[in-house]
Amino acid sequence: MEVRKDYAVQMHDITIRFGSYTALDQVRLDVKKGSIHAVLGENGAGKTTLMNILYGLYQANEGDIYLYGEKVDMKNPNVAIAHGIGMVHQHFMLVDNFTVTQNIILGHETTKPGGVVDLKKAREEVMGIVKKYGLEVDPDAYISDISVGMQQRVEILKALYRGVDILILDEPTAVLTPQEINDLIDIMHKLVDDGKTIIIITHKLKEIKASADYCSIIRRGKYIDTVEVAKVSQEELADMMVGHRVKLVVDKEEAKPKDVVFEVKGLTAKDNRGVYVLKNLSMQVRRGEIFGIAGIDGNGQKELVEAITNLIKVESGTIRINGKNIENKTTRETMDSGIATIHEDRQKRGLVLDFSVEDNAVLDTFMKDPFSRKSILNRKEIRKFASGLLKDYDVRPDSCEELAIRGLSGGNQQKVIIGREIANNPDLLIAVQPTRGLDVGAIEYVHKMLVRERDKGKAVLLISLELDEVMNVSDTIGVIYDGAIRCTFKQGEVDEKTIGLIMAGGTLDGKNS
Image (cartoon, rainbow, N blue to C red):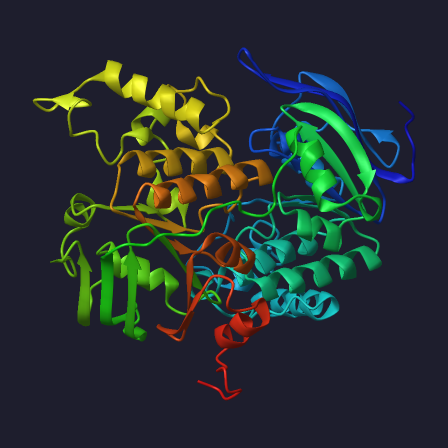
């Protein structure tokens, strides 16, 4: 393979093994200087592993890395940073009780005589980068007080502060609202116009089409092809990634909803700052129905789920399932009432990262038969259940029961949670951002699972920031704004523009709500 100086990155014949498992097998990547290059693949295909090799976090068993035509031994991240490479990981690495400026300069502090950190000078340098690229953030805000989208900007600023020329973004839009995604794409183009090179790992085909110049596809650890994005369709990218035809639109029969199984009336609650975030919210979900909630992040979705699952206190109003009130009960009582939840933050709320995959698979039910008898765990039954779940949900690798679940990719962690919660056979399945970080093949499968649960007579509450997902999957759509459901529509009787208007605080008569 030809080595060229006009390529910022060339990775040739990269192979890496973890024990007997080959994660990457003779993979190549050629990234032109000054381009946005997407790396596309299914969950567990090896995309993040390849970028971790480029960033020096992993060392390949075989293969070579070239930067601008020069071979580099990428022994560790310090070598990568010294060569102008920065990486923004899917799960951010920020200190919550530090300010934005303190996080950006951490490890690269400017000091006054005597070794005192010069925060004033650092703040000025940070603001210079902010203004140059339009990365608007409050330099004095604490990380714990800013949105996820703003936290991502801080991560990008950290890299730029260190003078990177090559920026790796791992699933950069997975936690962003539609407007934040558009803003990020604008920022990426500004960076490229300034001579930077960007490599993005993403499953979102629409965003590849909107942002990338080139796309390399990896399937099951093997290199498939590199294409010019402008010359291929989303469907063609999906087919190359998965290896077979994928339906990008949910295929389902019309719902046949029955009686109301879940009802919220006049729900009012405060967040941890004492601010009212749920304001007289009411809704109903029937058996055999997917009720989708559409809304801009921060309008009460998180607190609604926390109120239902009894993670926050309800000030007033009722929450009923199967006619039984569950507000202000315990989380265990919520689960025992017939509610299963796929939480938004899989690592904080869905998993115990240091537990094995098999232990996480029975996290809700380990105390019940057949997984334990007289308080003694039945390892044989736990392993049997976990093994079946891994195969049913195509978790990769599919024989990793003893592996700590933190060793799986984010998408495969999500599959374990989804399989576990559906296996609990709930009356109400709450799915919050269920396809975040999943590839199109896995998204198609998850949507089929939600429809299958609906067709079995279950009630499904879908909460997603992906408006396309809410509109495609839901039978009934409730639009949330400022802590309340403002309008409810049947699928097909409203367009995206109208929902977007209500999400932003408008009403059907054109006035603000």
